[in-house]
Image (cartoon, rainbow, N blue to C red):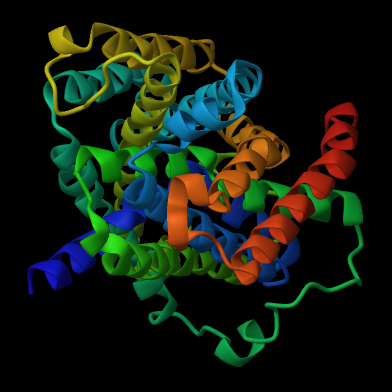
Length: 405
């Protein structure tokens, strides 16, 4: 019964790690521009995420290493520093997007500009990291993310074309603007396959001292939790496809448009449900990204690290998440549009995926680290294919999108 409760808690709190500003923004953009036709990107990205999250937990249980520990130990300082630099840069961009999401949610609720909320929001994230424990962050804050289930509920209050939706989980070739289509698909894959999630998950397994009895729960949490989060993200895309094109909106230009997504189903309360969902999920994601940043730096350089320890016992670890939050805060204070930051950072995330995934796959096939718990050919093939797809799409579409404005 204890294991069942742990799995159930792990599944529902996975929403806080999976669903955040990247998924909300990219799903809304995709639905407005291309209807249901990009649902396949969420399906493909979720399959890859399930494999990678399960592998992250399995690696930690079998080897007693975190991912970054393993990369440094197996490949040496050069590969480690390259992986760390890429992951840290991407984490900073994602953290900026999450702070922007929290600030925008507060703007919707109060009417004050998001720039005024950026500093208080960042301070709240830092204070909880400074004073809180891993369990509080993982279970307490993330559990609040269940408010986002309102996106699924909204589908049942509207005339949802279920049979039509079911036909859009396969890519289509008849697209008017393949460049933009590819860019949005890339952003979706980057939002779903977030590297910080794997670093955070493997570190959490070590923090919570998972032993070999957790192989089964780990598999269940990865599969059910990521699927649960993906269903909510897909619901956002479906709502956007049902609401925006009939209103003549084919390009979502700001979160102000996205904020009205739930009003057709819930009336004026839909606006507040959206603001609450955005703020809570972004707050949970900001905590996890900040911790993931501190984890990878501290683990890579051999410093003391643990969210459960007091800051004076691991000062370098605490300094990393403090500095990261301060750096990520700057673009939001400068007034840069959080939606543009989010979409761009998700595309950059897709471009960065091979830098962390390739050495991780090597580790997962090395019996010195995982013994008999290594990967099978199905897991290896699926991850390689999806990571290669995301990388190729980003190589093709990202430079042209930047040059085209």
